[in-house]
Length: 79
Image 1 (cartoon, rainbow, N blue to C red):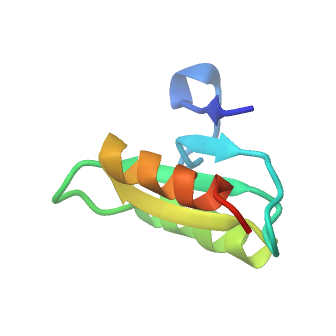
Image 2 (cartoon, rainbow, N blue to C red):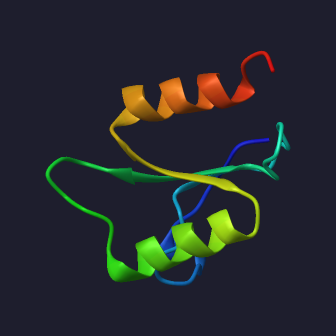
């Protein structure tokens, strides 16, 4: 199940854009913050990603759909 988030949906500031709640290897799931170059994650986004990493999630910043698709394919690939 792939989930996307947004502030319009009532989420808190900085919540990552994509959540893939599928455990793989040492990870509980994958979360991705999508960005367009040259933008960088905000302080709130960085805090979310670091917090999720500390809880056992793979948390990434991806620049564009192609990078996000590659990250998802890599995450779901053979282990």
